[in-house]
Image (cartoon, rainbow over all chains, first blue to last red; front, side, top):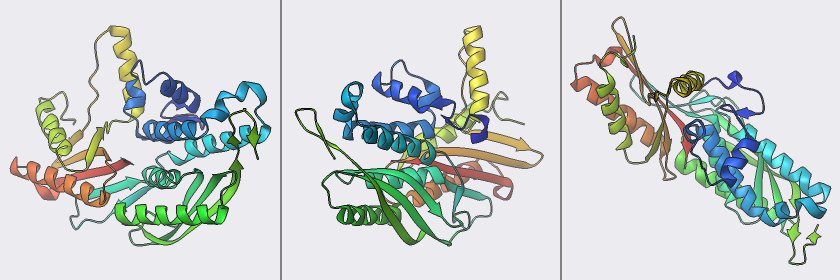
Amino acid sequence: MNEMEYGPDELDGHTLEELSDYLDAGFTPADPSIDDSPACQMALAALAHVKTATESLLETEADEQPPTSESFIAGILEAISMNVRAGRSIPIAHPSPTARITMTEGAVRSLIRGAGDNIDGVLVGRCTLEGDVTTIGTSIVVDLDITVRWGENLTAKAAEVRAAVAAALATRTDLVIHGIDVTATDVYPVQHKDGEDTE
Amino acid sequence: MSFLGTGGEDLVDSVADLVRAVPGVRTIYSAEPLAATLVGAAISTATGVASRRPLIIMTDHEDATAVSIRIGTDDSAGVPDVARLVYEVVAEFLRQLGFDPEFTTIDVEVASIG
């Protein structure tokens, strides 16, 4: 798949806005160019999580959405777009010389995102794999940003994310992980019943 | 030469069925470049004739055969083992059909996990 065939804001020919509309429409009418695209599918999964976590915020967007809320959501969406792109091919070892087995960098980043997003009160943003993932056995560093719900202990949440990501990578990939750097870059507000945000 | 359109559809379908049956494989994505798919979709829209998007790409060049497979796996442990098993199942199937293992390259790409 040649990512350069499309614009920088597109995933296999679709923008995040189009994917968000498709999600809102319940995946109907079915669009094979979305349904058959791993990048679009991973983006949809991430979008669904963000929408669930921030539902109350998005509902009040037209009213008194504070600028910080808009900026953190925009940042998360931008990160989703970057994270799901196929990226580099990560080889998987096999003794046969005619076997060319790989996993995409995008699949690994989405795995990392999923592990982090499963922590309550955390939204994973930018995620990068630092190091030569194209050479089997090379140790790499995972670098990811998280946005944490207001009022949570940032250090504790970062530790939870680090442990979850380490477990996911250890059980589902052959990658050699030298370190996992988690940076809490932002907080997102808690929506109270009266509609007021707490920041 | 592509096996598609030369009576090789059954072979490709058989390989796809084998891949789907491997534990841990959640889906098969088309190995065809998306740009080609979009052209096919446009032609289908214009002609009203449904186009068939090949899931597995098999090409034959001189004495060598190349197979391309893109899969999505489930969220269970051992994604590399799933990919390796896909290779081994397909390689054995083709060997039994008479394909020379030394000249049959099989690409397996894990494009999504979970």
